[in-house]
Image (cartoon, rainbow, N blue to C red; front, side):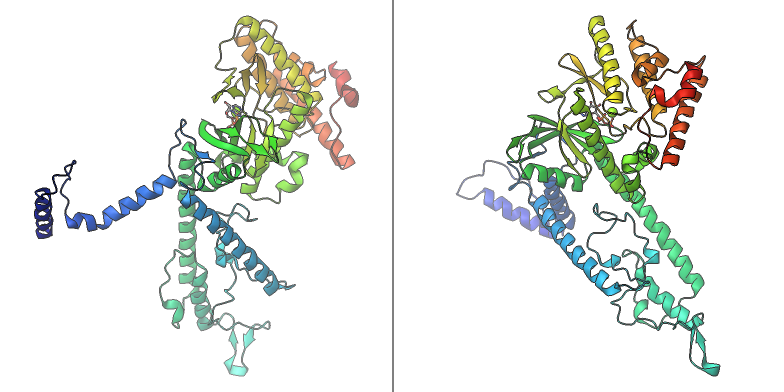
Length: 511
Ligand code: ADP
Ligand code: MG
């Protein structure tokens, strides 16, 4: 090795003394061993890949623009094509699977042959395939003999039941094929190996827990990239929006919240209709952790109830985005200042940007307003809450100084993915919580006109609840919710809305 290094050095020295003159830059000597090292090759490869997939988003540099589509994103294009191809393959496979199974009560799954693994497949109806339960591989040439319905084969003394040790052993060996691809089962499958039930079960359990562990690791990894930017699939969807001309360019991410990552984008056009010049892209995080505790906002929302039970977690996240879109549309119609929806693609919601020149409007929490402006803001918020409740039939359910932006001298409401209708089983409780946040905030910043949470609740809802203390107030709210639930059960549909007239006895008691 050393010798090689020396030889190269000598040669290089002689080049420097050549009559063609000395090169401008002094080249650092490098040994042939270095050049050939696998490590170097790997590093080069990695560097090349990183050009296509920067892990950090530079806010000043457009992330995706119309100009860099054809040249800089070869890797992305290749991935897009591969994805399309994989999907086509899977569609064909599904067709074959359907044909193969026909009307049969027992069906054979082709899941293992799919190109897009269900874990990654955002279109798949299943989020995780329980590979343990996958039936036998239909294409395996040496299928173990199956026991007929009667439960045994043979006659007289030579009866073999399905519990026969040899038959079971062979079956168990064959079933190792169904283990996850990364599990190395060796060549045993081809031989006449017989695994006892005990050994097979232990192996199965081990593989199962390993698979879950690696899935968790994968999720963690995905999550960490989502902190800075987004996962490749989301990036691809965003890229397609630029490709379609909906957006002209996507700039950096300006907010990473608990449930979402928000990017700034330059608007393009949809079907010749101009998209707002500045857009916000809210990407709902596809990592499921944060959404676990939020089920109650959507699963009891009658608008989404039927669909909720049938969906996998990935699709539920898309429903959050859809819910935000519908809620924003209602607010827009009522004239409440809020972002205007541009387009929804799976878990990505594009809307107009509240702010200017790429600088997002400040939250009420952050901004220092004059006492006059703050007072105006308070009255505006009160009016918006009433409009939201009475005209849009919605309760924000996460209303606070963090979700109210100050822009062009007025308050804008954002973040309505969790908003529900007042007749939601917990709708009034959410409203009360909103009222408390709003009331406390404005009192804290010195708006003396600000109502307390009880007055605000009644002013927004049009209800007339009176109580001596908070516990009693909440108890009355819960009683109303309960009555509404009973009403739904009896009528078999949702109750129209809460009105003082509908709740005769309770209102009179409390009036
Ligand atoms: P989360 O559910 O993660 O709180 P939000 O909808 O509140 O999501 O968005 C997070 C942050 O992104 C907001 O606090 C706000 O600063 C910013 N943001 C969201 N939508 C817009 C928008 N349309 N225009 C400007 N800024 C926005
Ligand atoms: Mg928010």
